Structures are given as structure tokens and as C-alpha cells.
Image 1 (tube, rainbow, N blue to C red):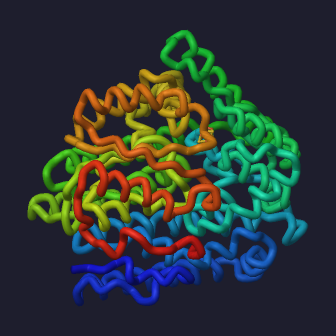
Image 2: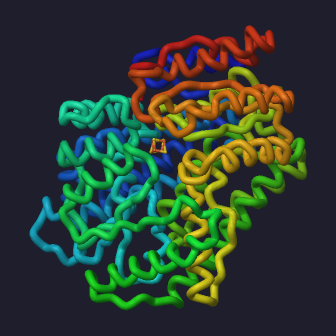
Image 3: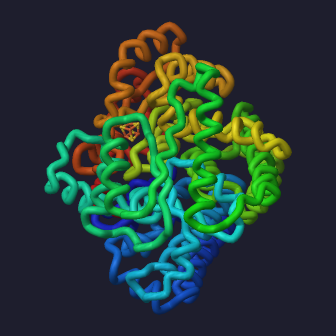
Length: 508
Ligand code: SF4
């Protein structure tokens, strides 16, 4: 019987690597070496500037723990599931390190030359980077990804400094930690000094409005507020959204001197359509009795390929092809993706960044297999690849419904009805419902969720968290919500009892 909890020491991540049998342990170790190779390659892509980056930016230290981050998400995996997991994470790391390297190469703090910096357009991480596909001579940089988004999932301690900074600055402590961290990184001057203009966010919640205003002032660049409508079910808003996108393109043209290249844009959108096709194949397999990709890697990979790479990195498509081939082989052989599948689960609402491997733990400890995650469902519409007007409609349609817009702020029809439809499609008997305690938007729907889950005979487990702040609700407390439900309501025995209670508050 595996005893994965015994690997934790409470002080550092694990005391030794997991034994998975000779073949899988060797594969896992080989992948660990590949990650280090990619990190070293990253440093050598511009040794002087990257070394200066390591000593300049507080968040860079966290990237040294990348291998531990991947290990956390690989626990308990064997065979095909292990291989798919590593392929997903390796691609995400390759893309992020390139993103960081480009930023340091252009960073005005490290040299006077601004040539590369002038070719960079900063995007808020929630805005449609896909627009940059039509500017092949420029680089789009989702500016909060490296210091905040990616860093917060790699190292749970990394955001505390930004939260403290923003609260010392005067922001109330009940504001959502996501925008609070983004603003805090600005207060500590922890963003690379790059870019010739900025496309800011219009996320429809109080914290994001604050962070957008603050960051626009901090970057001190010409700023375009892309304001995609939230009332997207009203078709009259479509024309406004399309015009808004066109204005954004014109804004970038004006500040860079470039002309929009529609052929380049359509080529990238063809890739996007293929990626979406592959993603949907994954979902189809997960709906069957033999799902092959469970846990966080499904959602994380989709978010990276969609939000960060935005179909402009061809390597994502190659990895998708490889992953889907492996997945089909595993499915045909009726391979199990985990030791024991007792519950088929959906994860809903924004997850805790500091515990992105929560579903990996739930699978290993209680046999709760997470088959789909709200964050995976960000983009399902295929884009028109010939007509300019139609493709902008598709892009607007997708972004109006993306992360936190449709499901969190989109009203009860989107949040509730879609959840039950997803449960039905994936044949799920359980929902892990994240409660971001600072995200007020979901708070009013608690009673409706409870009532409707009861009517459908679905187990609904509420798991509190504070998105980026592990001090408010720790990882251990998050596990406690599931442990209590499984022992008191379902009266089940754990699959691995060593994972029920252990300390990881001080780890990365
Ligand atoms: S989690 Fe909620 S409060 Fe935080 S940024 Fe998203 S929608 Fe806004």
C-alpha cells in the first residue's frame, strides 16, 4: 500500500522521490533531469541579463523550485497518465521560461537599448493575446504571468510579500488576492521595465477594477482599456465588442508603426482550432469509464495554451498531438489513470493558486478523480479563419465567456445550469466547489447550489481558500473540508491514510 504522506517532512517538499516501479521511476527521474536542462538552457539564453534578473526580481527565486512544483502534480501517477502529465508540464515550463527570457532581454533596467522593448506590447493576463498573432514582428507579453500567476502556483509563499505590500499601502485586506498581488508587485516595483504600450483589463469585479487602474498608472505607458461586455447574452453587445477589438488593433498599430497582418492571424487561429479539437477529444475520453487525464494538468495546460501562448507557439500543437496519441493508446488498453477511482468529480469556481495540486491529493487520498475543471472550459468555440468580421466575433464571444467572466460573474444561469450539464456529461457523482473567500460574486449562490445538488443526488463538497494567500486558509485546512465530508457524510476509508493529515504549510 502506498504511503505518499510519508514523503512529506513538513519542512521541505519531500524527503525522497516516489518509488513507482523501475520503469516509471526512471521515466520520472529522466523528466526531472529534462526540467533542469530546460532551466539551465534558459539561463544560458542570456546569462548576464538572466543572472541580473535573478538578483533583481523577488519572484525569480521561486522558479528554482520548478521541479518540486511538477513533482507535486505527478504524485501517484503511473504509465500513460505519468507520461501525459510530464509532457503537459514540460511544455508549460518551456513556454514560460522563453517568456521570462524575452522580458529580461528587453528589460530597460539591465541596459539602455530599448529596441526589443519597443517591440513589446503588454497585455493584462486576462485579455485576448490572440490579437497579437496579427503582429508577427512584435511580442505580446501577458505581464502578470511570470511575477504573479505562474509564480503563485509554483511557490505558495511567493505572494505573501505582495499582499503585505498592498495592504500596507492602504488596500483593505478583504479584496481578492489575485488583483491585490498584481497591484502589490507594482508597489514593490517587481515588474520588468518593458513595452511600448499596454492593453489593460476590464474584469468585472471590484479588485480587478482597482488593480487595472493602479497598474495603468504604474506602467506609465499609453493604455488601451479593452472593455468586453459582460452582458454578452444580449446580442446587441456583439457589435460593440467587435468594434472594441478593432480599436485595440488600431491602437497597437499607432504605437508600434506596424500594420495588422490578417494572414498571420488566420494561420494562428487555424492552430487554435486544432488545439481546441484535441482538447475536446480529451474531454470525450474523460467522459468514459477509462479517463486518461485527471487532476490539475488538464486545466493548467489548456489555460497556458489558450491564455499565455494564445496559439502562437507551434510546440503546443506538437505536444497535443503526442499526448492525444498516448491517451488513445491508454484508453484502448483500458488503462487506469489512478490506483482507485471511487468518485467521478468536477471542480468548480476559481481554484487556490497556492494549492493547484489539490485534485492530485484528492485522487491519491480518497480516490476522487477530477475529470474536468471549470478552468478547462474557457474556450470551446471554433474560430472563423477567413472572414475578419466573423473571426473578431468569435474572439469576442470567447473572451466574454472566459475565466471568471462567465462562470464567476456571469449570473446564476451560467454558473449553475452549466455545472449540472457538465456533471451529467461526465457522469460525475461529486462536485468539489471552491469558495474563494474574497470572491464575493459566488457567495450569493450557496443556497441554490446546495438545493440543486441535493435534488440531483450529487455530493457537493465546499472547500474554502483564499486564492493566493495560504495564511488565511492553509493547504491543510483545505484538505480538512474533504476529509470531514468523506468520513462523516460518506463514512469512507481513505485510499492512502498517510495523506489524510500531514504538514506542508512551510513548503513551497
Ligand atoms: S476570483 Fe473573483 S474577485 Fe478575484 S479576480 Fe476573479 S472574479 Fe474577481
